[in-house]
Amino acid sequence: MALAAANSERSNSSPSADSVDRMMAVVVARLNITSVSDLTGKTIALDDTFMASSGKIRTAIVAAGATEVQLTGGPAIAIDRLMNGEVPAAIVALMPPAAAETFPDINGFRIFRVPLSPLSEKERR
Image (spheres, rainbow, N blue to C red):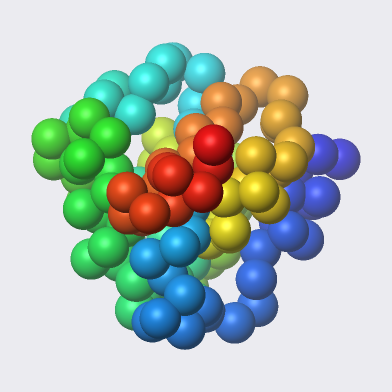
């Protein structure tokens, strides 16, 4: 199943603070979320392994168009919280731009790739 493959793409360790600026957040969202700005006022699930980067992730999502978002961790894996209908979107990975571009589509969901800094956006090109 594609969601199992997406879940296996997650890193089991959080990225170092130095490397986070060069990363992209991979956001998996329900189909009714058609753009990052549709996440305004919504809660986005975040795996505990990414909590140290939550400020940078939130800032990047706001810069991408969602004027207000709340990131929440918890005992359940973020993708499971999305699948259970608890949240409309989940951060499933922090990846270098080239890897984020190859993150697979997941049937029934939208994938957004949000650069954590302008530097990661430049590396995409």
